[in-house]
Structures are given as C-alpha cells and as structure tokens.
Amino acid sequence: MKDQIPAIQSDALARIAEANDSRSLEDVRVAILGKKGTLTQAAAGMRDVPKEDKAEVGQLLNSARQAITAALEEKQVALQSLADEKALEGIDVTLPSRDVPAGALHPLTVIRDEAIGILRRMGFALADGPEIEDEFHCFDALNTPEDHPARNEKDTFYFDSGKLLRTHTSSVQVRTMESTQPPVRIIAPGSAYRRDEIDATHLSVFNQLEGLFVADDVSLPDLKGTLEYFLRELFGTDTEVRFRPHFFPFTEPSFEIDVKLTVKGQAPRWIEVAGCGMVDPAVFESIDNGRKDDAFHPDKVTGFAFGMGLDRLAMIRWGIKDIRLLIENDIRFLKQFA
Ligand code: PHE
Image 1 (tube, helix red, strand yellow):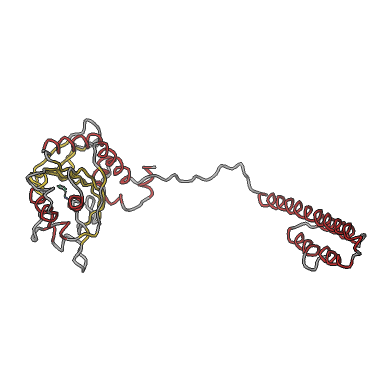
Image 2 (cartoon, helix red, strand yellow):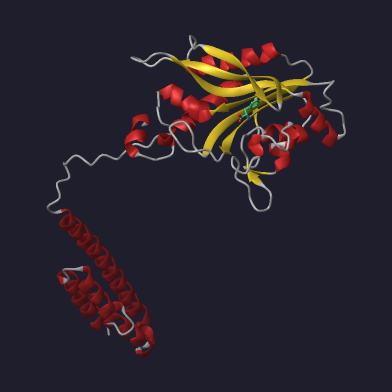
C-alpha cells in the first residue's frame, strides 16, 4: 500500500501531462478519482491497513489526492487558454468594429417631454384618464349634445358596450374635476382617436396635450398669456401666435390657436396647433350636479382649458410635412433625431 500510492500518483501526473484536450483530461480524472478510479480503490483499501500504519497511509493518500487535483486544475486552465488562442486564430482583433446604431427618443416623445417641462414650471401637474371612455366623460359632461357631429358613428370608434375610444383628452378635465378640489391646474398628454380619413395631416390615432386651470378668478388674459408664453418657450421668443374665434361646446368664448410657420424658401403660413377657451359654466354645472358639494359651482369658479395637438407641434418644430412619418417607423426618418 505504502508503495502503491506514490506509484498511482506519479502515473496520474504523467497521464495528466500527456492529456491534450479537455476530453482526454476528463477521462484521466475519472480513471483516477472516479468511483472505480485507481486512487479511489486504493483509499477503499484503507480498512485492510494495519492500525499502526493507518496514519501514515492516510497522509499519503491525502497528499496524493491534493497533488492530482491541483495538476488537473492547472492542466484544465492551460488547455482552456490554448483553446481560446485557437478560437482567435485568423481573427484580426485590430479591425475597427462595426457601427452600433445609436438609439434616440422619438420626436413625439421629445416634444411631449419639452411641453410637459414648460407647463410644469408654470405650476401645472400631470393628470391622466382612460383611453376607453364613456359618453358621459367624453361628451355629456362637456356640454356636447346628443346630436353633435363628434358623437356620430362616422366620426367616433364605438364599442358594442357603448363605450368609445376618446375623441379628445378633454375627458380628463371632467375626471379631474370629479375627484379633486379647486384650484385645479393640470395637464394631460395622451392619445385621442377619430375615424378620420388618413392623409398628410390626419391620423386615426393622434396625440394631444390637455390643460385645465380652474380657480376663483381665472380670466381670458390668463389663458392668452399662458399659451403665448408656452408657445414662445417651445418655438422661440419671436414666434408669432394668433388666436382665432372658434366654437367648442365646452368653452365660451372659444379660440383656435395658430402658429406662424416660416420654412426657408417657402411663404410663411399659419398652422393650427390648439383649441382653447374659457370653461363653459354648463360644464361646471354638470360637475356640480355630480359632486353636490358646491366646490365647482359656476358662481364660485372660472377657468380656462386648452387642447394641443402634439403631432402638430412636432411637425412645426422639425418641419415635418407628413404626419404619417411619425408612425411609420422608417429608420431613415428616425435616424435624423439620433
Ligand atoms: N378638445 C378639443 C379638440 O380636441 C380641444 C379643446 C380643448 C378646446 C380644451 C377647448 C378646450 O379639438
């Protein structure tokens, strides 16, 4: 036994040295340390070793095992680095790498975040509401009568349940006033849906940014000042802005806002970017009827509201001529914003 162990050890070390791939190294390991391996069998012979020799033999066994295990590990590492070297053979590591295309925010995201940033600095907080709405929040509470064209099946996506895809973000005005106390100063960016014929300036899904300010003494100059300031922050201080009288069922008076677009080599033209107006007392009345706490009684509060087309703002900012570019994911278009 005492002579056997050093013999097993030197045989093992020789075989490990000879192994030239990890497969044959594994075979060597099994042949020596495996269940039926030579060293394992020798260790099993311990029980026949006379008592007085047990300590010495045990020590021999241990050091043999340690030496073999260390040699196996060392060889494994050496074989691996050899394999790595081989794998890199023929590869020119000094070649410049291929371009990794840089990602970027979508122009709509950029303009939305900028718009939110400006309005938040003015004290507006973010609000939210569902895109699948009911007729009450989309129309009735906004003083929009049953026979208004916006409620027509031809213009609005209705579900069988009677619910609909909101045609504007103005429904968030209602939801906010239902659930908070005045003063209210909120903005709500989000999608709106209409059964529009799709062309260069219309999509059936588009993006709006709603705004609502309600307090005890909000006036038309507040509305005008807020929106003019906003548009100049967004497009530059010399931006020309125009308020055109218009009609919305939920504001009175109502306006549409145009921004003058000057593109080099083209005649300047006015582009409509938003609808706005002073909240119609009929809207407050409807809220008041639902709440019954008088918080939004039309004698107590006044307010202004606006709804901007975010897609339009993006088109103006970057001179984008066709709104469809914003949803087509054409990499040649999007690359320009990277
Ligand atoms: N909701 C209107 C639209 O989508 C815009 C608007 C919002 C007008 C708020 C007035 C006040 O056209």
